[in-house]
Length: 324
Length: 250
Image 1 (spheres, rainbow over the protein chains, first blue to last red):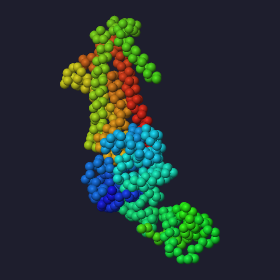
Image 2 (image 1 turned 180 degrees about the vertical axis):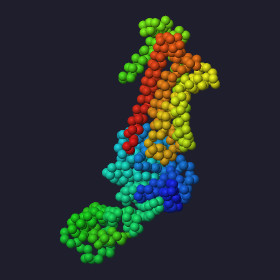
Image 3 (image 1 turned 60 degrees about the horizontal axis):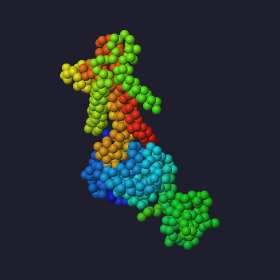
Image 4 (image 1 turned 120 degrees about the vertical axis):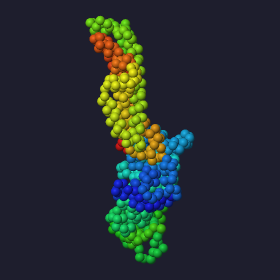
């Protein structure tokens, strides 16, 4: 299901929280909204499930203006995950996950099966967790339940407002990895708000950067990290090229220029150091710097040599090469 | 466990007061100069029953009104009345129930009605205050999640707000009932009977034995009801309180 904000504005007092914001999210896309605090990202997110009404402009879900859909009906088909989770403390984990199916009046058998399936999906064994009280859960477990609850009625759209912001860095990486795995099987249309650039780059199919209520840029991560706009440049940081290299695989860099390779130009000097073709270009660069060499043998996971990664190719990829 | 033993002791003591054959020698021993000992007009047990009926009915009415008012003024439509309602009820509590009784008798006549009014007015405040506290201190993310998943405002109230606020509301109702048992002594002034009768008669006739049996019985009744309601509250609330306190960190 695709989403669209069309020329939406929203002011609080004199302050324009969202200022003429337009953006489309296509079906199955994971769109990250990012920006400095107060940039309007959460306000924009909440317009989709009508927790915030725009002063002007419209929001569309699957081509339908959300203002014309009954609000409870709309929300029951949009999963919503917030930073503080907000599990119901008087219901156990199973009942929390069953909340939306109950609202939709599913029969008990179907609800039970669904709860079991979802706890499995988010990595919480049903036998151990279904009867647990939310107060007993760790931050990471609570947010897994939060995600399971949001997915319970299989909504086509998922809204996530800094969902992994309140847990420690290790747990956060766990949750991000798990969420990517879940998203790769479910393919929901996701809007994900964060202020953490690394998280945005790791998760986003596309990243929309907001500033002072406006859309500053929307692009796939690799392109965003090359954007010349001064605000984006500043926002993405001094080491943004390294972040970009971290997104690119050795196999891509070697493969792309393999045909154009001129004989003799990229022969390795000295003893060959090999790098996995699955490694990132950032790791490859680090390996070059550590070994004091300018070329690496790229080796596939099966152990087959697939080409040579030279510093030239790396530089080419770092700055010029575009996706698509 | 201690409170259980105390409850048994209080109940036994009250039962002893109900048996004239036991009460009479006790009073003769405590108040040898009283002249008359066991209150003759009505048995202590029937006075207690009337007393209980008056205070529980007023407590129930105050409970219902307090909870409904508390819900009404915490909804978006009623929120502007919140300060007004709170002030009015604080004011009602500063007026002594005896004064309300005196003012109400000319309009409502003698008997149960003016007593009921005075007690209800006096005991709404604890219920209302606790209902407001219970509903206003719910964790914001829980309410946001409830609304965000598509519960209607009524469903949020019934499935989330009230269950979570119930332990605190229960405390308010208990306080209100206990206040009523103590205050219902004024019923005798309007001729509605109850344990105030021996007290008032004893004060007029200067008979401390009558005052003693009325005062003792109403005090024990208040203690017993308090203990019973506390027990009920505990069963209801221990889970809720524990769950809420644990959730704040999440």
